[in-house]
Image (cartoon, rainbow, N blue to C red; front, side, top):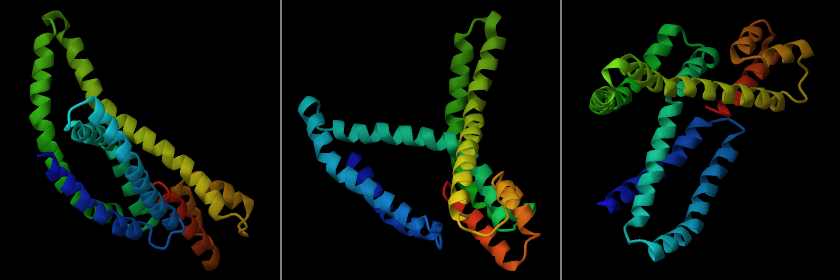
Length: 228
């Protein structure tokens, strides 16, 4: 059973390089992104036999596949945590960097609905029985508290996701914009204001002449792409 998933993962790996090249098209970070992809693959090739040998010596032969399953589950949890932050950054990217209106941004993100529908179906299958089990185990006198804890934990992932991704974006954006504009001839007050946020930089960009405007727009796009 497990070898089918290994083959599927191997096939998906072939699509990662074109995706990286397309995502970082024209960005100076593309070389770094490709290097990280190649480096990660190299580390896996080196550590795979060692870890596999240790597992086979101490456990059954199928333990090497169960490790992949555990890593996959952790990756899914991390991806779900970042999902809401990713949606926030994606809509910001469309509106601030691509110049889309709110309606155009909503239309551009419609493909997400397909994935969200699949995810919603899975959540519906799990969350209902889980909530029922929780409320059954809670004493009647504490049902209100149990329901509140259940709802709080359910919303915690999305809240943390937006907060974590927003914090990472703010940090990488400021650093990336500083590096991209090093040696430029933009006034210091414009540089300082542009580092506050992507929206602030785009607002300032509209008042600059052609050459400086393109310089700031390209630098903002490069700095934003560092995380997205």
